[in-house]
Amino acid sequence: MATEKPGWLRIINSVAPIRICDNGGWTDTWFAKYGRIFNIGVYPYVEVQIRVYPRYEMEHRVILNAENFGHRYAIFPKNERHEWIHHPLLEAAIDYMGVPADLSAQISIFSEAPAGCSTGTSAAVTVALIGALNRLTPTRMTPLEIAYAAHRIETEILHQQSGIQDQLCSAFGGVNYIQMFDYPYAAVSPIFLPNETWWELERRLCLIFLGRSHSSSAIHEMVIHGLEDDGPDNPKLEALREKADLARNAVYDGDFVALGKAMSANTEAQRNLHPGLVSQDAQQIIEIAQKHGALGWKVNGAGGEGGSLTILSGSSMSQKRNMIQAIEQTNPMFQNIPVYLSRFGVRVWTQEPEGGD
Image 1 (cartoon, rainbow, N blue to C red):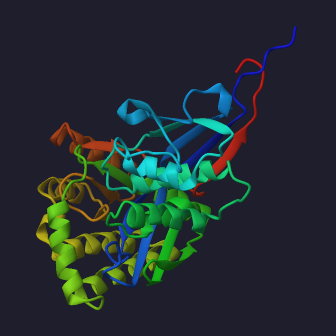
Image 2 (image 1 turned 45 degrees about the vertical axis):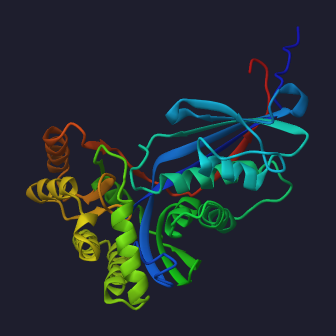
């Protein structure tokens, strides 16, 4: 007896990495005008799955399931009345890409990285979602096109402050050196490393979540206002650009001591923008890392209260484990998030129906 096929037509899967260790961050912005950024794409990645149905199979055109928040609700793609209420970034991305009139879709989104981790998670979600929705169209967007579409949704549609590095890192993955020559236009240069350097870098990196969502909009507005007034050649911005160059050169040389120094120097350059960009919690973790032989540390993203740090440990594996244990014992909110370097950026593939689904 033949197994009856399910009502869905196909499943579209998409994953995209998050970003850590963003030396040169703040220089990928509209007020910096030009910049240089070093960053690293890592797993845990964000996941998007779209179950595609004929239009007549579902009551609603689109059901969105934001798994991390426990939110599952109907939304309307573009050309139908809809206000972005629950998750504006996700809903705006769906409206931007659209769903063909003869189809319905159930869209599930999940991230293993905590919300507000300052690792470009929202950009990774948007990149993965755009990549998956693109499979419903006859065209195929390049990673660069996906990154710029994700950035456009944040800045032009939702009118949010956003640099370009998070979207580019999520789209391309790997270790990157990004040269923004005229905001938002940039060239991405992947840094290809020998396997042993790649494995050793992966082994030494730690991502420590401070236990609270990143939230420092007031401080950020003050910093932005000051940098906007001083112009793109502000020495504080140039100091950040230089740290991206130092990090790039260090990984090319396989010099982890130099990479650690570049990361720590970048954190001090962030502190120089505003002391509040390196929080008391972050400073406490930095001091523990120093006592356990860490080579460097980078406050991820723009900095401020909450968020996370990237730590580059020394050569001893046991000392790294002792460091993580000491950090987590200091404050129950502090959490080590295991990371693995991502050789790929956004990945999209399709699953066809089969018996038993």
